[in-house]
Image 1: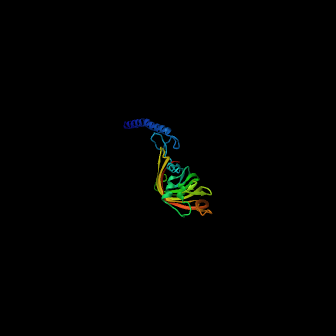
Image 2 (image 1 turned 60 degrees about the vertical axis):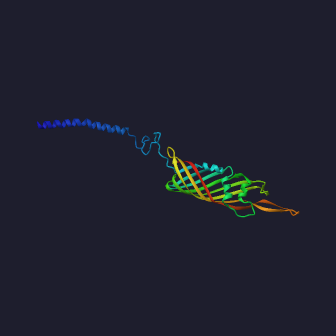
Image 3 (image 1 turned 135 degrees about the horizontal axis):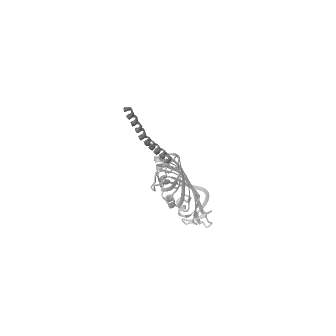
Length: 267
């Protein structure tokens, strides 16, 4: 009788376990069917939710195109392209164009520039007695080294070179002396500067860049030379004038300060 009871108990346990096993297997199969493939577009692994409850990954910025609105105060339009070959390095290349006289630079000529020569018109005198005529492209090339954070998101040191040509038309007379042999003056600038700045990112995918910078350097200029000459008459009367020549005079602005803001789009 004990054997019969044991066999009956074993049979009952098997009958009870079979529905549970079938239920577990059914649940696993259903979950496998409802789980998307690992490579499926419905799988949101590696993505994050933004404020609008939609999924979007941050943009890993290696390139950026920016515009400098503060250069408009100097009557220049300036765009810059940046490329990050390394996590802490950015190489940048810029192009700009003046549409008027740089009043800040003209003021610098009077306050900080270093003149050489006293027999020809100085750079500040030309600026004060002329009107803006035109300019070539402002060309910029530089490098940024990040010491706090990474490229496009942190503090950096910057070094750059700039080149620009400008043209002015002198008034018929300067300080009462006539201008002879043409009245156009050309200025060529070559500038070097070292500075400090900060870059940050904003936007739903961190694709907008913001840069605040300030720098100090030197601007070297060559410009058309107007020599002072004397016209002597038979009556013994002498007249002074300034005559345009093919020679070039030199001057510089030292130190040259600059600060501003650049807004960009990165990808």
